[in-house]
Amino acid sequence: MSMLIQGLAEPAHAVVTGASSGVGLALVTQLLAHPQIASVSAIARSAEKCLALQSLHAEYGDRLLRCAMDITDAASRAQGAAHIASRTPTLHVLIHAAGCLHGPGIRPEKSLQQLQESALTSLLQVNAFAPILLTQALLPCFRTAPAAVIAAISARVGSIEDNALGGWYSYRASKAAQNQLFRTLSIELRRSLPNLRVVSLHPGTVDTPLAAPFKANVPADRLFTPEQSAAHLLRVIAGVQNEDSGRFLAWDGKTIPW
Ligand SMILES: NC(=O)c1ccc[n+]([C@@H]2O[C@H](COP(=O)([O-])OP(=O)(O)OC[C@H]3O[C@@H](n4cnc5c(N)ncnc54)[C@H](OP(=O)(O)O)[C@@H]3O)[C@@H](O)[C@H]2O)c1
Image (cartoon, rainbow, N blue to C red):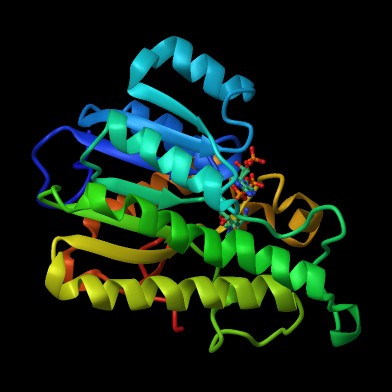
């Protein structure tokens, strides 16, 4: 089995958000199977009701900590982060896979006319504000790790330079904001915690509930299963060095322009 992260010899404690579905659930599953993993804290609003997490708990017992949290709610974040810190005072991996593209009252916009303040606010909260604020709450646990990675799952459509097609105003803006927030964190940590690397990652186009309404337009050979995407992402995370902190990388390790 491959190395989990560069320069880490000790058993590792990981946290994954978006753990009840899609890429996040596949990441939790593959992390639990990794011999270096001591524990995975799996965050989602439905963490306790999720059948897939229930069966992983039956298989892995207390190596899996299920944490029901609404990452957009400050009290829920504080309570969940305190619970995780009490169980695993040192963390080595944090992967933000929670995210939203569509939902009740939210559809990716095709034109300015369709833009709604409520959708803009919701997507910025889930995709940008919540991950950086949860990182803030968990950061003390990273201070004692000899090496660690914080990976924010972003999206290529969050790239401003790469935006040739337009549309999807709210989602694009939320991922661009997420990228800027984590890039800024990487710069702050470069001196204070040089072995804590912060990266933004594009998972590819993945066959999940988030992508379901749009997958008809994607050629079959460019649509990953969640398991394929998670394996790619864990490979990229395993290869991240200190000097890669602050980069925006795709599933194949290639740099994406901001
Ligand atoms: N699928 C793709 O093609 C694709 C492409 C590019 C980027 N991405 C990004 O990849 C990440 C994973 O997406 P996915 O496709 O795996 O999505 P998904 O299957 O729809 O899963 C989304 C996850 O986010 C969690 N979540 C949503 N709102 C939450 C909240 N307020 N609090 C806590 N958890 C919340 C959901 O859990 P609960 O509902 O239980 O809370 C669920 O576990 C996202 O950041 C997405 O933007 C996906």
